[in-house]
Image 1 (cartoon, rainbow, N blue to C red):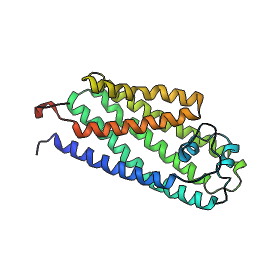
Image 2 (cartoon, rainbow, N blue to C red):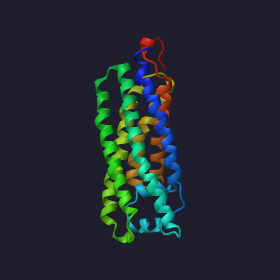
Image 3 (cartoon, helix red, strand yellow):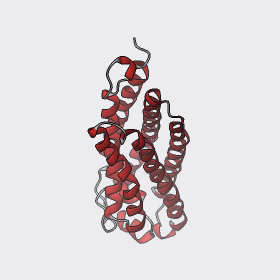
Length: 230
């Protein structure tokens, strides 16, 4: 087997697992909640970007709150596998691009991935703690901590997409198109940070879409020495 195919196969395998676990998380996080904060329509995204206790109390203002918390807790636990997989996938995408370009700046992706995953871990710990409390008006400190790690995670993801976009915008027309989607994450990040609401939803969807694009890229990727490259 060609030595360049090994990292590609590993990346595709990790990508498949990532998508499968992501679907499982979506199942448990797609639950009925109380009224979401203005502009939000996805429960887990609304919870991750929650920044005040009134919205938090409204979120859990539902008769089946125990079922809601139990479902979100399962999703929270599965998310540890998901963050491991998307972190590994992102790292291997960086490796594939490095094997083709030998651009040493791509190694910046490794500390970025570490920052993203560590932030995601602490985000999950804060969410898990929120799911245990009864008096949501006392959750100010938890929400402040949650905001720090949520924005670190999503900011790290947008920075990672920006890093990868440099490779894509130097390629053919459809790579350039992909690069535009990747680099747009930075703009969506700042829009989400300052405008909140629907912009957070759009930003999160852009990151998810970019991961799907990167998965497609790994399937099509060929090293130049194999005689064909996308």
